[in-house]
Amino acid sequence: MIKWLVVFSGLCLCVQAYDDVVIFPEEKGTQINRFFYDFKSPAAPRKFIQNGWGETLLKEYGFTGIRTSIYGTGNRPAHPEPGVVLKEYYEPETLGLKHAKKIKPDVLIFASKKLDNTKSFPDWTKDHNGVIPEKYAVLIIDYMEYMRDEGLEIDVLGIDNERRFNEGNIMPEKHHAVITELRRLTAERGLRMPKIIGHEDYQMGRNNWMKTFAEMNSDTMDIFGGHYYTRVRPLDKLKSDLAYAGDMEKWHTELHWDDHGAKGEGTHSMKTAVCAFMALWDCVDNGMNGYSWWDFNPKKRRRDHLMHAASVPLVNAWPVKVLDSDGAGTVDLSELHTRAFLQGDLLTVYAINFHESKARDNLRFKLASGRIVGMVQGRQWSDETPPEGLAGTLKPFAGKSFRAKLPPGTINIFTMKIKR
Image 1 (tube, helix red, strand yellow):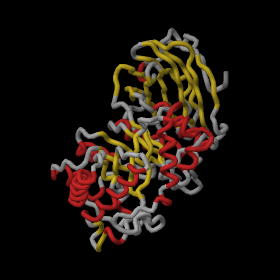
Image 2 (cartoon, rainbow, N blue to C red; image 1 turned 90 degrees about the horizontal axis):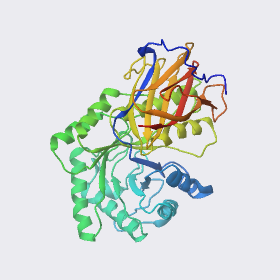
Image 3 (cartoon, rainbow, N blue to C red; image 1 turned 180 degrees about the vertical axis):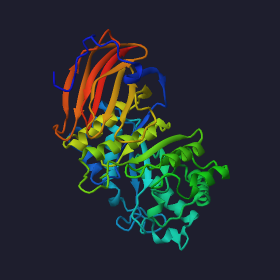
C-alpha cells in the first residue's frame, strides 16, 4: 500500500452524490476501433523492427494499422518524374510494413503525403497555383503501383498533410479533382482504390474546408482526418468539422505530446502531459474513432510511460459516461477531469487533479451499474514520481466503489475487472 491510495473502509457512507465520481459502464460513446503506429515519425520504421517493438504494438496492445509516408519531397525526391519511383527512399518503410504484415496480416496500411514545407511536392506535379490534379494523381498511382509490386496494398490514402505548411493548395475542389482522376487511373492499372481520408490540416476549421466540401456533396472522401494540437484546442472548430463530416469515420491522425509552450515547460513536464490527455479526450468526447500518436516510443522516459497509459487502455475500447463534481464538459486545467474506458470486462478510470494546491482527499469512485471483481490497481504520476509512476492496490467496498486520495498536480489511473 502506498500513501496516496486510501482503502475504502465503509465508514463514510454519508458522502453526497455530487462529491463522487460516478461511472456508467452501460452508457457508451463511439468505440475506438482504429489505432495506428506512425512510421512518419523520425526513425519509427527502424524502431518498429527492433527489440520486439512491433510485436508489442500489434499483438500485445492490439494496434490496428501503420501510418506511412508518400515522398516526392525536397529531402526525399522519390518521384523525380512520372512513372519513376526510387525505391531506396521507401526501403525503411517497406521493410517495416512487411514486418508488420508478418506479425498481423490484416494490419491496415495508411499512406499519407509527407510534409516538407514548400518542397512537399515535386516540381513536375505543380504550378504557381499548387498541385495540378491530373499530374499529382500520377505520382499517387505510381506510388500505389510500386507498393503493390512490393506486396503491399494501400488501405487508406491521404493526399494532403497540414496544408497550412505546404504549397499544394489542395482545397475541396482540387481534392475532388485529384481523387476523381485517381479513380480513373486505378481502374486503368488494375489497382484497388483505397479509402480516402482528408483533409488532415494542421488545425480544425481552417478556411471552412469541411464546410465547403460538405456543400459540394462530393463522394471523394471516406474518412475525416484532422490534427488538433495541445497548445491550441479550438473545441468549437473541432465540433464543427466533425459535424460536417457526418457519418464518416473520424480520425485524429497526428496526436502530439508537445511542449505546452510556457517558459520552462518541456515534453516531459506534467503540464504538457495534462494538455495532451485533454486534447485526446476532446476528440474522444466528440466521437472520433481513430488515433495515431506522433513519436510513440517504448517505455523509457516519463513522457513514454504516460503516453502508453493514456493510449493502450483505449485500443478497441468504448468510452463510457463519467460524472464528477466539476462537470464532464469543463476545460479548466485546474478542475477535476475524469474519463473511463471499457475493453471487454476491463474498466480503466482516469482522474486528473492538476490544481496547484487543492487535494481531492478520500474521493469516492462508484459504479452506477455492475460490480467490481477483485482488487483495483492504481497508478499515480506527479513531478516527484519516477517515470513509471507509483503503483498501489485498492480494496473496493461491496463491489461497487473504491476511494482514493488525489494530491494536487497528479494524473491517476485505476484499472479493474467488472461484471455487468
